[in-house]
Amino acid sequence: MTLEEQIHQNSIQQPERVALITVDQQVTYAQMWESCLLAATNVRKKYNLKQGDRIILAAAANIDFIYAYFGIHIAGGVCVPIDPDTNQTRYELIRESTKPVCTMGALHKVEGYDVIPFSDMLDPCDKVDEYQTPDTEQIADVLFTTGTTGAPKGVALNHRNLTAAAMNINTFIKNTAEDVELLALPVSHSFGLGRVRCVLSKGGSLVLLGTFASMKKFFGQMEQYHCTGFGMVPAGWGYIKKMSGRKISQFADQLRYIEIGSSFMSIEDKELLCELLPNTRICMHYGLTEASRSAFMEFHSEHDKLGTAGKTSPNVEVAIFSAEGKRQPIGSEGEVCVKGNHVTCSYWNETPERFQKDFFDGYFRTGDCGFLDEEGYIHLKSRIKEIINVGGKKVSPMEVEDILNTIPGITESACVAMPDPEGVMGELVKAFIVCSDDSLTDAAILDVLRPKLEVYKLPAVIERISEIPKTASGKVQRFKLKV
Image 1 (spheres, rainbow, N blue to C red):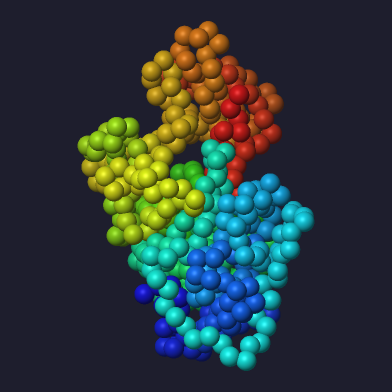
Image 2: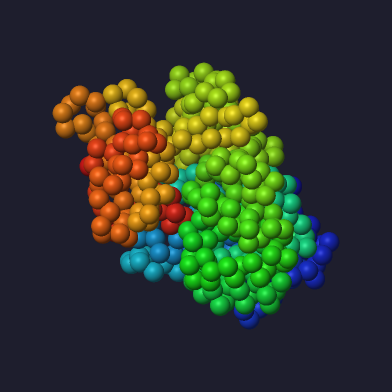
């Protein structure tokens, strides 16, 4: 069944179960389904939406957005979720690429275009269209990547992809209809939107918080609605820890699960979460917009593997391939590639012939370098395009950063390739650091690195900057640091 079919079944089997919760409103599954059908009817009648037509959604974590999102799917349309704070240039790029029939929601940094409020889809109708099951191979969403390389792509996901991803995630995390999840992630990104789909497909309740900005509101709603889980990026955990210390431990007997993902998290933070939440299923995923949550690990049961990206998710296969497309044995480094029904069906406006170049023997090429150990755990090294080639020897920026980040006085770091000024080695390592200790010298930093790294991995240049450029989900954008 598609996600919409699953939600329809929930509206029949548990019509009075609360699906959506805000500060001033609670919506049952029966009410939510009726509003989704109303949105589908309006989008057909008002905007003459035909199967396959696109609508850009400036996605905000509110009830009307959810009606619009599922309503457009029911009407046969394609959703293009974007951040409400999308800038003019990016919006125009997406608009030109997708040629939408309209844009809905609210855009804060774009001028000169009509943007229709979500509520426009909820005008009363004399007759609401009956539900028709969408074709599972039809494109449902186009998500434009945030971009760690500076070249965002439109990732097309069909209904089969979305259903498969939700099933895989729910199977690992063990979500049930009894769960009440606090949503504080942006729904314009794969992670947050995925949590919406996972909870509602299982018949659980979703508390729409919006952001982690107010700890008082976060903990207040956790307590008021007796939330059993939530999702967060590592930066979100950093904020919670900074603003509230160990307070999350007060919910140790209440929280059944947490899903973490989208960027690197230190082992120290993973161990702290294990200490604070000894009975919570703490799950961290590895994946891409193109292949959502391809691997998972659970902090307590896999405590001795906290430095890895975990094992393959349910119904997913992972293999390592060489640059020539040859499958690599256990322990050998290469490109991490994944296979499963959750993998993107295409890139928007890209030919099938070009899209096939993103696969090795049916496995999608993630662009990440790593290896599999004998137990099946994935060890990530770096993005392949970010590997630094020092005289033919490969250096993972993450390996150097992991050590830099342990040095007292260094808040965070990022390493990139720089041209060798002597023209001998081709590339050298350049380290950018955010430093809280003005007395920390380059020499002192190198004294820490030398016993732990080969000579060719040592930074040739160390530059201090005020912050490391990152995407909204916390991924380092190294391309912005390159000369």
